[in-house]
Amino acid sequence: MLNRKTAIQWVYEIASLVVLLVERPGNGDQKKKEAISIVKALAQAFGLKLPEPFFTMGLSLIIDRIVNHLNKSLWKPLEAVG
Image (cartoon, rainbow, N blue to C red; front, side, top):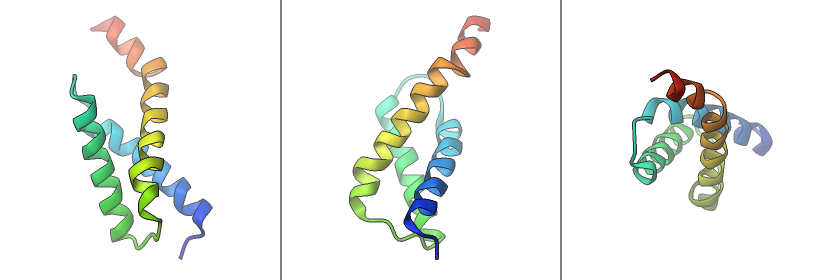
């Protein structure tokens, strides 16, 4: 069983991967819902015990942070090329 800090770190890392997997032009709210659903399912499959508010509020903020970082770093140079 992971402690809470390690579980949240695991969720952050998985969310980073999932954000990349669901990426496509537009539909930001739909992509976020898909990402939350996938991360929540994976967390449950691995037996992570996190409170529901974490998935409804905390994970949303984590995804926003990841997307903001990617918008400033990875995706911005790709838009300049395309």
